[in-house]
Each structure stands twice: as C-alpha cells, then as structure tokens.
Length: 486
Ligand code: HEM
Image 1 (cartoon, rainbow, N blue to C red):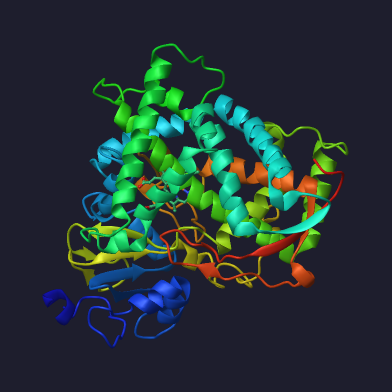
Image 2 (image 1 turned 135 degrees about the vertical axis):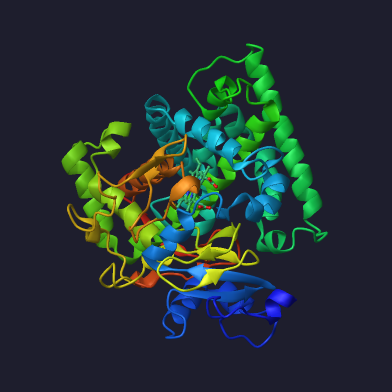
C-alpha cells in the first residue's frame, strides 16, 4: 500500500489513473502498444514512465535506450527468474528455466543451442516439409480446388505437428495425434495472465495443468529410458537425443525430469511464437496477393522452374522469403512486454530517475520497431523495406561482445529491431524459428494463391489476452490451388 500511495520525487512519472489498485490494467491489457505509444507522446512522460498493473508498479523504458537498459541490464541489477518463476515450475516442472539459478539456465540454453546443429537443422527442413504436405492432404479445410480457412486456428494445429516432428522427435510427434494435444491445451492454461499476476490463487484450471505437467514429464521420462535401454534406434537427430548426452559443468548428466522440463519449455516457447507468426504472415500476404506471386517467382528463379524439394541450403538463397518473416516480426512480435525485477535502486540511463526495488521493469522492443523515427511509414507491412543494404540493424562487427556460455551477443544494442530480445535472456530459437516459418511459407506459396474475402486489404486485430499476442480469430483467408489436389 505504501508503494502505491507514496512516490519518491526521483521516481519516473506515474500514469494518471482513477482507481488505485486497478490503475492502468485495463487500458494496458486491451492494447499494450496503444497504451505505450499514447503515454510516450505525453510531454510529462516521454520514453520512461510508471503505471499500475493490478497493484504492481511497472516502470516502462522505451525506444533503443530503454531496450538496452533493461535487456542488457547486469545480473546484479535486473532479474528475470524472480518475475517468471510463478509460471515456470507449474508449467515446465522443477529445476529448469526460471525454477533454477540463472547460471543453470545459461547452461540449459547452451545445451539447446548446441543441439541445433547444422546436421539437425538440415533434417528438419525435410521433416517439416513432409508434415506440411501431409497436413494439407488430410485437413478438411483443404479439400478441392478452392476454399477458405481460419488462419490462426489452422496454423496453431499445423505448427504443433511441424515443431514436434522436428525438435521433439518421432515418438512425441505421434502422440500429438492422440493424447498429447489435450495435455498441451491443459498445460497451456497455466500460461494465462491470471496465473502470472495471481500465482497463489486457487484457480479451477490449476489442477488440470498440474495433471498435464506430471503426465508429460512421465511420458518424456519413458521415452528417455526406452532410448537409453537401446530399444529405440537413432534414425534422425532430435533434441531429446542431444540432451541425453549433455553434461553440466560439474560433470553431472541432465536428469530425466530436467530433460522433460526443457522439452516442455521448448514446445511452449516455440509453439506460441511460431504459430502466431506464420498466421500473421499468411494474413498479411492475403492483403497483398502480389507478394505471394513475387515469392513464387523468387523460388522459380533461384531454385528452378520445376520447384525441386526444398533443402536447408535453399532457404539461405531466398531473400524475399526471409524478408517476409522479418517484416512480419517487426509489426507482430509475439512477445509485447518483457519484465525484470529490480535488484537494487537503478538510475535510468540518460535521465535523473531512480527506479526503486519495489518496481518491475518493463521493456517492449515492439515499440521501437513501430516508430517512424526508425522505420518510415511504420504501420505499412512492406517486406521490401528490408531489400539489400537497407535498414541493416544487425550490429557492427567491432561492437563490444559478451559471451553468456550459450552464445556471444553484443554488449549493448542500438538496434530498434529486437523481436528476439537481447542480452543474457535473448532467444536461442531464432534460427529454428526462421527455418520452420520459411519452410511452411515455401510450401504454402507453391500450393496456393491466397486472398482476403472480397479482395479486401484489411487485417484482423491482435488478441492481447494471453502473455503471447496473436491474431484475433476468426481470421478467414480464401485459397485457390495452383495445381491438382495433393
Ligand atoms: C527467449 C522471441 C521462437 C526458445 C526469447 C525472447 C524473445 C523471444 C523476445 C527474450 C525473452 C526475455 O528477454 O525475457 C521469440 C520469437 C520467436 C521465438 C519472436 C519466433 C518467431 C523460439 C523457439 C524456441 C525459443 C522456436 C525454441 C526452440 C527461447 C528460449 C529463450 C527465448 C529458450 C530464453 C529465455 C531466457 O533466457 O529467459 N524468445 N522466440 N524461442 N526463446 Fe524465443
């Protein structure tokens, strides 16, 4: 109560609100970007301000300086696990991700990053292509020569198959045809914002979530034991095989329950972000069908008129396909808010403000990605804005680097484009995400022409009701087959 009623003069300005505990919860929750942009436009705020989210004081730091301040913050200053811990244990299980010290998470990220070898990535392109072709053959929405489908819903189904077949291995993939899909849905409820804000509340879905987690941990445990016993042959590499061989710095093997937890975390992290991104890609393309034809022309020009089976190397040779993904992530980054606990009073770079330890820091790299200071006509979805040479924000070669054990990243970042975050918590799934999104995109472009009903150029709104944002459903797109039915 004290922190809600009193404000130290050095604290950032507080967003005006009528109701003390509710604060700005509703306006922020309905559309976080609208909330951030309208507040940064106020003279008394600018890029740094505090608002009340269900009784908590959140200090937002925007634009490149703000992104850098929070995402590249030192471990003694800012902390992620104390914020995300209430979600981690109940969903992923014990001793992984945010249910362990940061040093252990860094080792777990290293295991996963190193597991995404060239050899495995190569095999994933073939496996994902096969899954997409099989899906399009058997899905009821793709019968005949033309039709329509609810993009967000259908893409959520498809990416579960593509991500599980590649990263998770054949046994897990096959279970998604039966019991895993329901378990996944139950577990996913543990990710709802109410679990995050009120982790102590005895919510009705918590029991289902706990049963789902324990069942999944057991299923992964059985897979590992069966593989270790030699009863299953390694036909293609996957993350479970890789984790079974990994050792922590102290020489210990990764215990079975941690392998299970890491696999569940990868499934959730990969599924939410990839399914919403591929849905946005198709929804955006349906507003500009001419780009779909350009993509097909790119494939024909570079890979050959007869469109041979796609390989990993081909993906690196299709720049417009990569630009479509890149531009979609600029406008539709699935993670709109990234939070950190303040570990000691912090002076915010370039200001006189001090954030006390009672505040939570909030970063939103999606804001700088939509600012006209960095991107002309920011609201326009235009994959060509990334044409060769333009807007290369990858960071200078000579920038000071830091090694987190799982990878070397820039010590600071001035980039306004950070859909995969920055610093020690930066995403390790970027390469896999691009591979998966581009492979699905290639398959859709080859098979279909897409357009909005009535040829409209409108796009559906965003659903911000979960921790990952996604397109509102239904998002209906019409398809027409280019050739004969599969
Ligand atoms: C972290 C975005 C796909 C695994 C992150 C972060 C962002 C992000 C913004 C930083 C979070 C923070 O700082 O708190 C995305 C996007 C994706 C994607 C936009 C796809 C379009 C994936 C995939 C995987 C994955 C496919 C798994 C294979 C992870 C992991 C972390 C992470 C393990 C580290 C969390 C931490 O260190 O705290 N991702 N991600 N992501 N992501 Fe991704």
